[in-house]
Length: 435
Image (tube, rainbow, N blue to C red; front, side, top):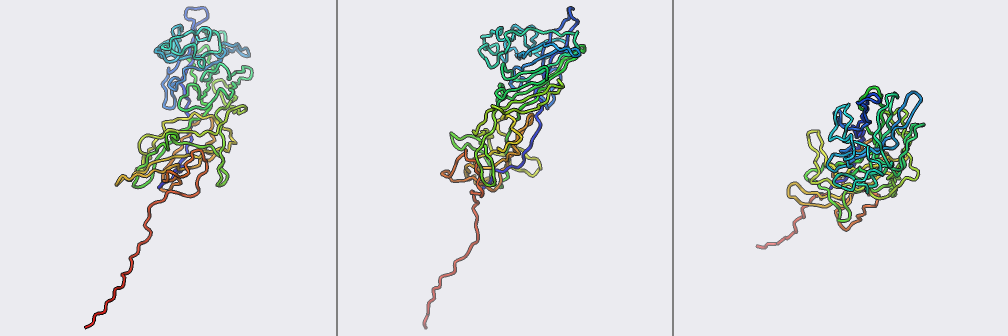
């Protein structure tokens, strides 16, 4: 009774996902108000387009720091792990950190929920999971044996910070002479919903030491985010998405290359590296995406189905959508990629008058490569509309293959139609009556 078609495909720029800050305060060297270099977050109002780093399940980031005076440069931090603690077991054990505080303070207090002191892998010995990550959580551990508290040096003009998240002991390197951050493909991988070890982000800042003000890091995404939304325009029916079976769940998307009416299963990247230039420390920019030795897959993307019925097209001019609970943190794809996706969906139609129900199996629609050429720092929201044509089938014993990318050329769900009516002529029954 209806077909899944693309109504609109919108690409929205992702807001930078953090309001992190680096505290940039220090007193004169040797005085009692000598200030450590500390890290903090949320000291300024978070706009609607921003979100705190820890709210996205990022509880650490890595940072290189160099102090500069003219052409002279000296390293301050070498891929330091900066960790977060809420004080109640989320993040890292903060018991040894002298700069930890329950929340962000003012611009000169040098305390924060974010800290790096005593987070070196040889010194971080927490075994109590109630306090935060333990030393056995190797994915969250520093590359450094020790991490010492650093102090601002007013003999230097600036301190430049080159940051990224999530923290990696290997796979991310910084070259100070060329001011470039190199990200290996294995350090940037795709993931569903949980960005803790994924959703690679990067940021930079240049602190003017004499200003004694906080330095704020605003992260950008190396990858993209994918979301699905649905609405329906089938008069007289409600629409409810369903799982095809216990083994075939959700809305699935098969990677494929389209050539005319031929669809060939293909692959897409699930890891991808990059070179990021910090020529302007506070405005890093991706100069190259790197796919050498990157991983690819032909596996379906799978999105959870929205609960309940799909919102119907209304007459107010404002359309509402049912949104999948699944977010996919995608790796940016090559600009010349020819891979698109055939989306598969099964759904239940229910008549609004007598509540008759019909199941439509495996309706398909192809989203071409030019609309899935995912770029860094963008969110792609695909809006699907159900209408009165469908290439699915109401036959549960039909060709149901959620890995087949071929989109049927014709509809295969047909309405009940009364096409003409006739009245049969009377049978002649002539009787002769004699008088």
